[in-house]
Every structure is written in C-alpha cells, then in structure tokens.
Amino acid sequence: DLHSFPTRRSSDLNLSVFQSRKALLRERGIISVYRPLSFIGSGFFMEKKMIMVNTGDGKGKTTASIGQIIRSLGHGNKVCLIQLFKGEDFYGEQKILAKLEGLDFYSYASRHPFCVKNASPDETPQQCLFALKKLAEIASAPKRYDLIVLEEFNIALRDNFIETGAFLELLKKLSGKADIIITGRGAPQKLQDMADLVTEMKEIKHPYRKGVPAKKGIEF
Image (cartoon, rainbow, N blue to C red; front, top):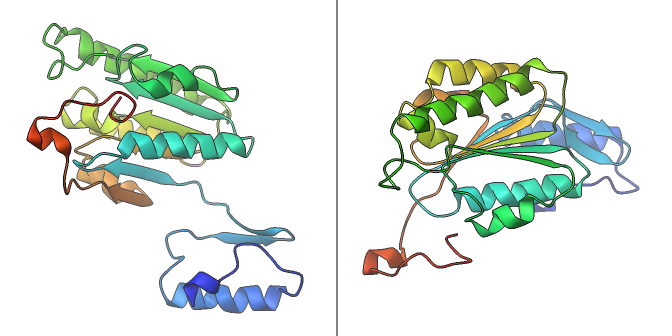
C-alpha cells in the first residue's frame, strides 16, 4: 500500500528494507521522475533539483507557489521570487512576502498591456528583459538559493516578451543549483517537456462567469 510507505525511518527500518521498498516503487513507476533518491539516518530526501511548472486556466497557480515558498522558508532555505505583471503592493501576499527573512523578492513589468489599458507596449518587453537579466545574474553566480520562483513567466513566454530558447538555456544553468517553479497560463510545450513536474490548474467553476468581481483576499 503506497499510503503505508514511511516518509521517515522508524527504529526497525534498515537499509535492506529501504532498498526493497524503493525497488517496489520504481517497479510501479512512482519514483522514476524523482531519482536519484538517497538514504540517511533520519529518513529519505531527494538529491535531484527539480523544475516545476504551474499552468492552466484555473485559479491556484500563484497560490500554490506562495505555499511552496512558505514551506521552503520553514526549513531554513534561501528563496528568490521574481514576479511579473503583479502590480505594485496590490496583491495581499506581496505585503507579507516583502517582510520575510530568507526571501529575496523582485518585481518587474508590473502592468501587462492586455490587463491595463495605459500600460506601455514598449515598456513591458523591456521590463521582462530586466527580469531575465536578473535571472542570468543568479545563474552565473555561485549557488545562492535553494528555491527560485518565477511568477507569471509563462505569460511572458506565451506573449513573446521573453524568448523561449534563451529562457530554457538559463534554466539548464540553474537546474543544478536550485529547485525552480515557473507559473502562469500558457506554459510552452518545450518548457513542459524540460520540467520534472507539471501541474495544470483546470477551471471547473468560477464565480466571475456569473459576473462576480474579483474578491480581495481571494483573487488578490
């Protein structure tokens, strides 16, 4: 039973038991994506750094990534968040994240031309390139972060504000240094193919279909 598989080593769990259960999970295809797994005295951990994508037309892509940031910080990790198209001090989480120790928070291209009528169509691509430059600086430097979250970068890729090939090359440089989460609708297929984990948030039902406006504390 998968649900009875221990996430921490009990006093009677020895290495042979671990190896046999690991073989069983591999046979079932459960841990193939997450190899290599390592075993130490306190339990299990994954050595492989992962590229994770949150995409789809449903609510929850940013919400999930913010939860992942909190989880990572809770383990004493160093985290970097680079946001696009999120305004300035508009979303509730921005007010909290900016105060958290262990998190470096950058925001670029606060207004997307599709969403904000007076947004400059020239300024947005330039700001996205600034965000890409910041990411390149991180990729070129010695390991600085355990987790890097690239908020709404999928939108920038979809709308050609950031060139997909250049972005994927940076991910290759970063993938051995940190876990990476990329969020936003319209994740390009090449990014999904590179990723270790892809989650699609699918809209089943949403109140805005009935004309209900975005709710403070829920949507922003």
